[in-house]
Image (tube, rainbow, N blue to C red; front, side):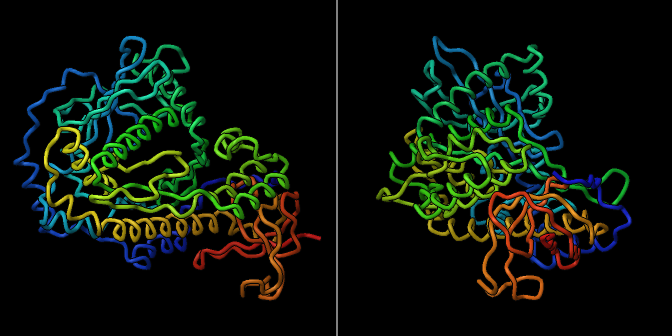
Length: 490
């Protein structure tokens, strides 16, 4: 759309950018170095750690993750079983490294999750666990919770169990490498079956009304050769969706186990309200790819092409449909609202214990329920406190991601103030002072636009109509304030 091609790299000499990004750690009061007592406890746990009695190290598991990842939560194996499939999904046995009530337990509850800052991640667990002993690295014997699924020919679950076992991954695959193998026709059998099962699970998701918001992945990475940064944005690969379907299947199974056992914690989200759906429907009409409401919004979203600026703008607008997610604990009585509406089923977080606190508790509860054992008291007693811990952590992680992207986007266009761009209007103008935040002087209408290159969503002053293509001028790009402002031309 834009007449300009702005290189995605931010100048390595931009001290202001580096300083603004570094300031996020202090500004947001992000966790610092791991406390010495917790690190000592982690080292002691690794030294004393033993493997479960059940031995599945002969199963040729593989991991599929971003190429640079070393905190590997999941390993996968699939084989044919009669006319259906057998799926083994190994999840890192993080609980075996964390002493309940100890210093490490306390620090993980303080953090809640791994935070991904532009200048490095802030791990939930010390690296001796998260990137070494507790990670499902290739050719390393590891402790894991192994979920075993029997699937029918349509990849629907007919039986499920989970138990601790020793496992050994055979290969650390990247999404790009796995996709290339599949596309070449020379993929490992597990990847061929992942595609087969994944596509069938996508169809099951469609039938139950599930929805996926497949936004292009935006990642802030250090530019080659120095301290600068760039935004890398790319549409997700099909193999990422197929792999995610295995994780979703596991989360749905975990929810069912806990609901049947009447104890646990769910990830819930209400259906979008009528007002949000009507607004979204109007946005799709304005942007040239109308949703008629005859198919579910989830099915409609799967038809969108994020490389088209107008359809990318629709994906941005669809974010309003994915609101209100939270955690719902229960013990003894099943809650009234159990559905995660975007998934179209009850669901629980259970597949990322190295990076998300709540999964550690869900895994332990599910393993006990699956094997008819008593649930450890430390896991049961933590349930009421977990929603507040995770909500606070999620809020902080979201704020970090948003402010970091705002900062880098401002730096990307800082040298282009006064230049003009083509844009698509995502949301039309709000009236002057409509919410106490008017135009360039605080008293004029404004809306939200999407420019194509770099792919930036920003505020624009002027009378704007949703879905229209407009010409805009960049009038402000303040790195320190993390603010970009455009103005309608004409």
